[in-house]
Length: 551
Image (cartoon, rainbow, N blue to C red; front, side):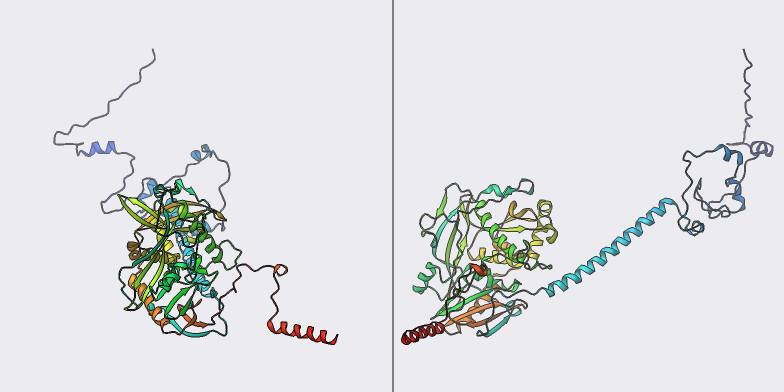
């Protein structure tokens, strides 16, 4: 066996007077040999245990001095020669020369990264602020530069009688009583409740109803209104689309026109053939104007046609279409026998404006709903999304979680359209107004659409939500009726100024707006040449007679 290693027991000093080693100097001298001593006070700041960031050998840590030099790193050639890096690549050279090392701040790498990130965030905020400021100025300039055309060309022979600023409309107020139903026509189909559960994840494709006919008949062409006028049932006659346009005039931006005819003591509010009142405006009150090119699918005209198409198809798709319907005492006054018509009921209602002034309006209801044994009348309208990038809100992402934000955006961009729908629901005394959210399948496809959601509102509550006052609306109607009743017999036109918030009243010839509207101009080679004037006919006939006499 080899030699066993020896084990020397260390000296343990006994301290009979207390705890810890004794205070004998001979004992302490043998225990603390070659151990560097650094004085320490509680008032001093404690540095790092191992400071790897000190790159300047001449400098000491904060609060340090000569007494701390024993803790500094000592260079040893033997250790340096025995050490080899795993990565043999040379260290990266400084970007700005050798002096760059001495100009950088003394800081930890982690702190340096945080400051770099902070500087990046500040730069990003500054860039966003500049972009926002630039876009605001650009939007204001573009909105001011966008010149809207008048809905009708003002002829030189027209005489302007009055102009009414919208500021005077906001102060008006008039209270009317409950309306009286004179005639009810048409039939209503029942509403399909399953559409109330439609979500963006379970969207429904919008169908096309080409076989169902929709009628947009003006006031003087309505046979029921003619009959009521002959029976002297009222003084003023109008349809709900015209009346709602007048009621919500202060919210309108685009130009519109209403033809006023004074016949005897009667007053008829009409629309021209091909009037824009039949279409639905899109983004009328938005900050960013729409393109003006008519061929652009996102132009104001193209979107109005698309919105009218979407609105009609939506109002028929959300019905049960199982054959059950409610028929009113009189059939649809505009439909021929055997013709398939859309689900709509016309309520001819009368309001009393004064002791001897009554107003009759043709109001529409689109569907009916049986809930808890009670029958409720519904109006059906659809909002359409054409490009989320322009509106700023993507319906497919926000409708389920932030429905209020979507509705708020629509109220900002389409304040006039939503106000008119609400006014029409109030006029017809509908119990519920259903709003559908319809979007394009693809932003560049304006033919195919999907239904993302359907929401129901009570008209009076929704009117209060959008700050629409019934008394103010009737005050506007009463003031315009009073102005028109002072006019003599003839034809007049009320035009919303395309660039100013005001309406102008013109006196026009009796034959104005008759057979002078062409929906789409034909090419020159397909156009029928106009007949020669009477003077030319007489001249030709005289020439022919003179020629016959010479023969």
